[in-house]
Image (cartoon, rainbow, N blue to C red; front, side, top):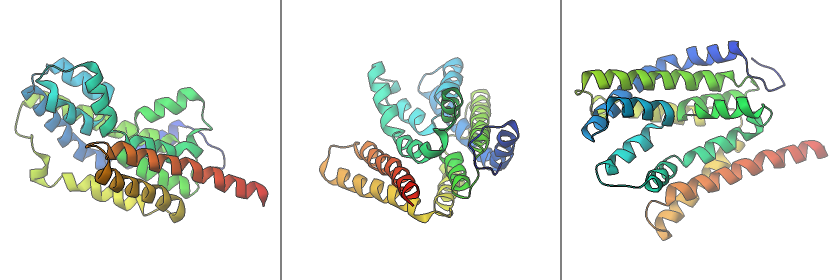
Amino acid sequence: MNSAQTCLTVAGTWAGFRRMAPLSLFVIVFGMAFSVAAMQAGLTSTQIMLMSGLVFAGASQFGVLEVWASPISLATVVVITFAINSRHLLMSASLYPWLRELPPRQRYSTLFFLSDANWALSLQDYYQGFRDVGGLLGGGLALWSAWMIGTAIGVGLGSGFDDPERWGLDVIMSCFLLAMIFGGSNKKQMILPWSAAVLATMAALQWLPDNTHVIVGALAGGLVGILIPERSEQKEAAS
């Protein structure tokens, strides 16, 4: 898995799956909670399973449920989903120096399974010299599988797990994410994009319309995340 050239291997994917499996167990509970909330919003079992399988974005799925009962257009659903998940702009930008070397088919199929946890863990791997993207894909597959299992269990049980916060499970993913973000070896490349995102978000909260801060922060952090690798490569080429 530790090589100079970017690759995507079955062994790396399986290793990433096994590494993410313990954390994925907690995702099952959130999948169950989503199913209960979706049924309360009037979705059928088929619609719930398809949404979890094809969207795979817990926060935006919960967000859409808030307006599902009232007549809404497809454009509204798209805007809500984009706004809530615009942090993926920053996440994918930070992976650009790594994933750009893959063929488009492998690159975009891997990004479909991009989530906070496997992104943070894989980015740390990248800064430590690992180049097998299988860790990112395998971790995403583990999270997706757990999300689907939880969704299916929730559809079957119906109720009883509608509030993960009651069990303190909402804190686990946040603590894991922070540990992975600031646990890498390349501090400068991590701090600058996130600092830009935080500052832009705070400015947007102060001066821009409501609910635009997520998009603004993600765009600012993503832009800095793209520029930093290019500047680093230029310095290496000049030396």
